[in-house]
Image (tube, rainbow, N blue to C red; front, side):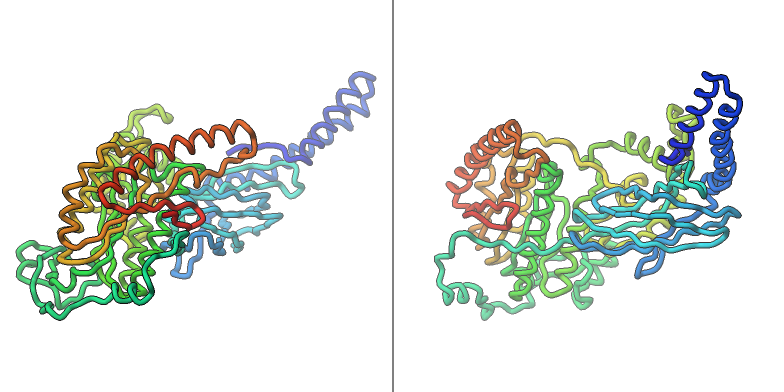
Length: 531
């Protein structure tokens, strides 16, 4: 909590100081007495403002967000679309509150505008005001609280304090369709014929394998004996359910999240994935999604229909808030240290031995507290996306807690050379296991850090023998630059040098991929694919 003078208060203080100083110089008692009046007014303003300050400090004021689904529930937004938020301010104290300004504290990628002019809340009353929330990225974010500035009734002094106002958001992607600069050489009749699937020799009852039950799978496919044996839902998958599917593999590594502003390239890749999957589903095809970095991260099994579109979107929502060990910049010990600081501010809970932030963290006590509240936190902020890779029960308690509250965890700053190749190789092998004939695999990746691409030769050959067609869509990093001083010669020169180096590196990788018979298309932020 901090007390300071407003602009009007500074003028009053300066007036009193000048009158007092001038009176002392000319030895005029009346002028000195007149100079004390502004100081007396400021003292009275402090006395009037302090009860309101104690109201904030003692948490006699409460903020809450009203959503369509009721309080304390996840609010769903669409990226790039402003949505009004209704915030209720309750004043439980015996003092009226004169609010000068309200500033939101956000975690994640949602811009919240909070412009409040002269809001007054009477004693033991409440008042509603609206702000605008506009997601700038896909994922899970949160409004943690509001920085509230109170003034006295004359506007001379102000005091600022933080009030928690937790609200979790899920931002869903828009649909970015690819537009091809080069026209296809295929005639419309040939293209239509290529989409015809010959099912005359398929019985539709040949069991391919048993796999874990995915939300949305028909109940008739559940293998009850295997379910009892494994103590989890197991479903049967048949040959005709696995053929002729479109698989999309999205690179979620740290290099995809680079750029200026940070993450712009990855956001565009998410929208391309959402748009391409929606297009394929609209044609009646089965679509599956894989996400990977140096290994497989998640899967949405191939299916068709509107329910599959929702499954894919829910998985995409979780990609900007991956919390798994090894996929974040902080290890478990560092994460618990950061969580202790967060709880000290947000919940006023101190898990450190000794005074201040330098005290030793009591980790067993923190973990016991997390174990006691994690169930209620999950019930409060649960999401339908939890079944699609958003929240993993194998995570530590600290990671699950921060993930539920919408606190993003930064990915590692870099990847070792060729680590991404292992992820691509794992995707190709997984899709080969899923397919019996036909189908397409589209890999969306920036191809950063790839050297020994020849290791893909064997899995690609196997995929081709199984009838799977592969291609790469590559976001070209320099197209996602948005520097503030882009017109300055120095910035333009640096960007030109970076663009040349990036193009040289990518073209070297693309040349080796095309030598293996793999088509590669570059895309920019305008949605055009450059084949």
